[in-house]
Image (cartoon, rainbow, N blue to C red):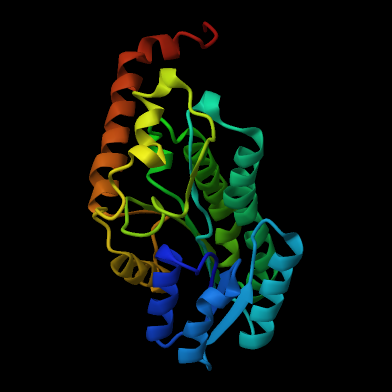
Length: 274
């Protein structure tokens, strides 16, 4: 299994769980020293590789090192990423472009790098970590939600393209887990606009009261990901956490259904008359 973003959070928890499970794991991080302890504890089954998913050469080198050490990559978990909070108007071009390069294009880079080997073997599993942000799109998370929505759309198309080749593509949509995501991994726009204080402003780092109290357990999420990877019939879409399953997925689908029904006549009125 090749896991991106193993320095902390869900990626770190998954790396620990995979190695404890006795499986081979390629542990990647921009600061590769952050996973050296895991390699030291599991020298025969762990490989640490420096990886910034926005760097084409590093992606190619990481996949090559994984294939040379373990003979192939059977599972790719695209986990690398970070949060960005800003009202849409507040969003700065540079940080927003970097966000998309990491979450969307970084995910695409690793997928494209592992697929030749998976196609040759006619087997493999690609798990892309999304977020309930793609479902809920809260004020202040428009750019992050858009990036994760793009990952989900890409994964659905990928699934249809690679299924006939024996390869599975899966979206995992975690809720709030007790990691550094809302702490040191969270970034935001530099200049807040006062008019958004009661909407996007409530989610700025200085106003956040959630960090450290999230309901999700990263170790349990890691165990769930291993279950999915080993399943003979995995889901295309898997929410993780009670908040994801109830508050995010079901409520968003219910709200969408209400609007579709309410505006059904107008929707159908745009066809050519027979």
